[in-house]
Amino acid sequence: MTDAERTTTPLVEEAMKKAAVAWVAVPGGPALALWCVPLEGALFVVTGPGEQAAPGLADATRAQVTLRGDHGGRIVTWPAEVSRVAPDSEHWESVAPLVAAKRLNAPGAAADLTARWAADGCALNRLAPAGEPLAGAALPADSLAEPPRDAPVVRATRKPFRLHRVRRR
Image (cartoon, rainbow, N blue to C red; front, top):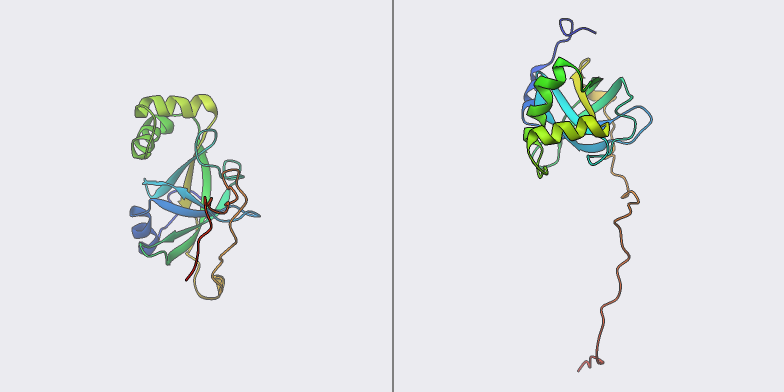
């Protein structure tokens, strides 16, 4: 689908303008919360070493994007066409600095960050609307809540240390 053939609904356009986090699901994988930057009628997401992990997104051609409101409720879910912006392209030169400028808690200047992305093999992914938003029967009826995934940062909680016996009256 070319950019000229692609049409975006007003709901998707408005939701994308306000998006800072998007739930992105590639085929066969879970939906992951990823920070994003809305530019040029699409969402841009950086993944890779030193950035957020999104297994399969850099190699995917399609994804499903869900945007949520301030109170956590789903606003819209739409199919997206995923394309990767190459570090040696003109598009990288115009988009990467804008995405880097929006990166929260970035170490160093935006120019240093884009140079690190290119050197470390990070993927700058463009998620462009590629169809009508899901509605009605196409949306899941349940909450889609999942148990927390295992992570290396999780620690077992220990019982509190007590020096003496506590008496109850």
